Length: 280
Ligand SMILES: C[S@@+](CC[C@H](N)C(=O)[O-])C[C@H]1O[C@@H](n2cnc3c(N)ncnc32)[C@H](O)[C@@H]1O
Image (tube, rainbow, N blue to C red):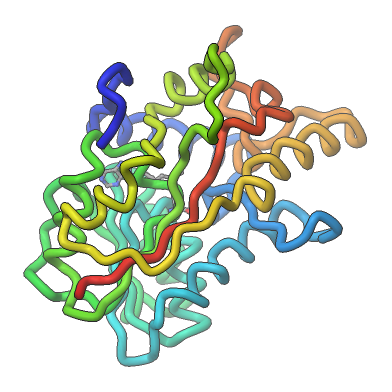
């Protein structure tokens, strides 16, 4: 369940947002096949942002249980980077879905360039109403996409429907860590407003999965490995290289008062969850 005071994202508007971000990244040369945060295993990890982005996909692969015979749904697939990595590393067949037409065009182009268009197919669609038959997937991955969807329970119910019994979903989601501060950090508000997101209710997450027919396997707070570290890395890069950071590093540039990654620097109440659940 999402806190009723939050503004709910509208899927079509989210699609337009990602159309714009995709085109501007291609135009300004900051294009990256991954549109997600990175994962640094340890505080001492020296991985670059790009390496950490791939590492996040690998953290998903370690949990997905996907093999060459598997069919994996990439829910909110972006421009296909994570899906193509799953194909390359597991041999699985991947179907990706995104609400952004531009992302889908780009993802299918990248699949063709990688000569895996027979294993990776990306299509436009809304995760709120999945255009797939019951039990048609062995696994579902949702890297940083659930936060844009207006009703988590509806999404998870749909995911449960399209998963075969025993199939897993692995996802990341954002939430506000406890104990909550009396006043929400303004950076979280800006993030939610400009990136059309809501934060999950951590107290309700397990029940939310159960109500959707899914059984929890693992729920981990990965804030230190992801969002907090990314904000540090971006700050360090901007200082060292004295340059504006690229879109894949979080520069969304919507205008003067718009969200900037530095708005979340050191904000340890903006958390990231890594969740694995399965259809019983
Ligand atoms: C932060 S991007 C993550 C992209 C990709 N998972 C990755 O890691 O590179 C969020 C993705 O969620 C997708 N998305 C958001 N709401 C959606 C919806 N209702 N249906 C389908 N896709 C959606 C967006 O179009 C975008 O591809």
